[in-house]
Image (tube, rainbow, N blue to C red; front, side, top):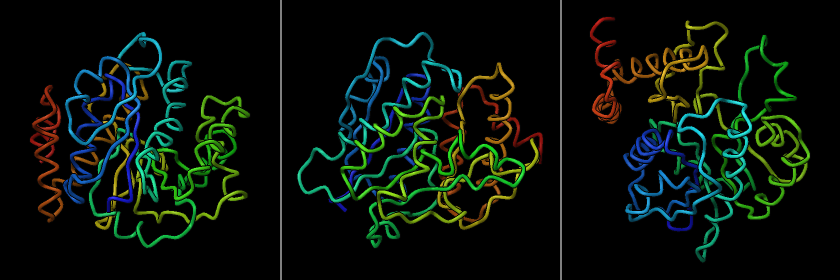
Length: 273
């Protein structure tokens, strides 16, 4: 597995979620793989002490630990994804890079499937319901929270394509044309499951037992309608782990409960049972 490396982007407001994401990945795959992380100065204070992470600090100090979706500062952060992927190619003999957003939770092994893939890219469709497919031109057919690339030139292609798109979601919408330049396969529906796939909120689609990883904000504060949606979906995911018969899922659940300093998930599980 040493021929594969991982990349991510972390800010102080996403640090707790990144650490849980990394824990969940290593629960199923071990800790032998290297991580290349683009991070802000605040999160660097923690990340620099972790043995299998290489950090590159980006940009000026952000105005807030919690950045609003679609804001200029949010765009500044997500555009670090291309650089993080490029950094991950630096060690010799790398044959592929997996980019992962900080707010994923791995619930199964994904490497066994990825390592047999020979295409340049493996991308994750958003799988929008019919009522939301109008978002594809601006928000993207693919979700940029998970990308596996065997082609280093993809990093420069992605960065250039994103600069040609004026949308706040340019890093994601720019993936729409990737199939024209790279051989590409697509993740199945049980990968990268997020709230946007459901037709109505807060009634979410059932998470399948074969789920590989979830896309969920667990530790963000309330304060906006979007964050309330995130929190209700997070509880949906916590309930999935709680109801699962899988030992690793129960380990993840306990990690979430222990890392949730507000105690909200533990109280919610008690009240809803």
